Length: 615
Image (cartoon, rainbow, N blue to C red; front, top):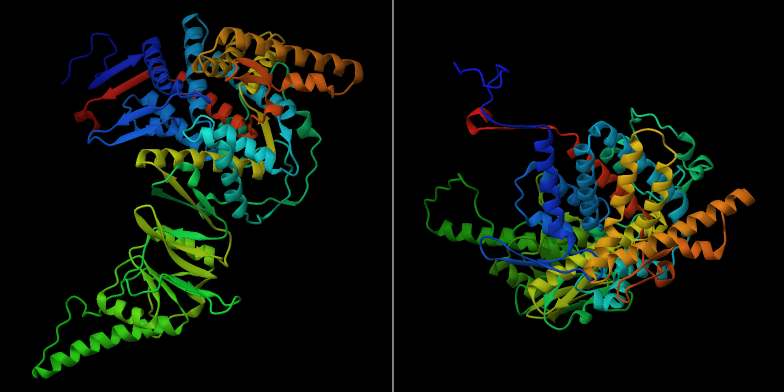
């Protein structure tokens, strides 16, 4: 038997136990350490990180989610922030660095309040109230609805996203490419009868990730009149078809050589990182007449000489019969190939091997065949050309047939030399939207970073097209929310007031970090930014009191769009400058950061069991 512990509890725990302020300080310190890793990579002049793994592979990036995913984080609280960045990346695609920085700042300020004697429950209630009010104000006053988004807004959002990436210098070129690529995969979505007033395109995702949106908080709001958004009260349900833009239909290929500006976008086409299986095959397949199409067979099976299955024994008494068996094996293979050819296929692509015997038949028939194609690539191509990936030729009767309906349709297939190898270009795909972007660059590290940067931009354009709402970037939203929340905190007479004030101050970490990373005076710039937004909100309230409605004054509107110009080191109207981002990015960023901070602040006990206890 184990002796009772010296603390007098009479319990024996085979491991380590931390309680109270010690565990809270340890959690916050770990979270701040994770945030400090990515903090210097925020903004258009943020710096890159070089990550080297145990076998010497190098990764150079400034994408927050990628940096944190590569780190082997052992501390459980720090892993919450790593998961937070992955969640933001999956839901929005951009803003992964900022969401981690905001969460760590909320934790730091929350821990200081606990040290001052404020109970964690009061801090959590205050953070929830602040989040609710911030999102309400953001949707009501900061979100700019664009009913028919023109290319200008989309390109500006894509340029804002890639401004901090390696392709920021060529943002005009790549932003146009990203917008064209997302628009090319447009699909009609199911009709929606719910009002769209929030700019939030995935309410189910919010429900799953933010319990506060479905379950009412146990804390009562002392000032309920200020929290509901008036825009939601007046919303009328309208039945509209919301378009979808599946990014999985956009295929990105990377090829070494040439400069990044020689990357190209294939509209309505597809490119495969594959080449002809034999030199005797044609390099291009086109229709004989302008209206004639080319049919493609996409297979997920081996095209090799037929062999007896494992465990099958054939006893031969006459040696001459061995030759007949071999001949029949070749005939079975030939019949299989002929069925594919007779279906009308002029291009054959397979994920597996093609042996010399099958190649001979394809060369004789003048068919272009490629082997070892990626399975995911063939699935995308099948969707693009309106065909199907064939797994087996067996039918229900036990015979082998090839259904012509499984063939994909296009206008031409060409093999072109790109960089060090060849690629197959499929033009004029007849199926649902699909497109390909071929990236060119000097080396593998540059191509990988270009791929990550372009993915973020594609996600931003997709979100803006689906929600038709945007907000001003460059620290404008955070400064406006900080000013508003400070005024809102003054209307409360409960202890949550302190937590809301700290929440308002924590939001300023984004403009401060942006200014510091740009080697500017953060105190001066943030003070000017806050002054502009305070003036804007004061004018809006005065006009509202006099006229009974929101102010439409152009000067006030321009003040509310004031953000940072990090190149010149001053403040400017960022809406006019084209620094915009999707509204959903800010809304989800605030929600995710607050929920992560609350999750960690609630912890006051940590028990780490030894290996013997865990089994």
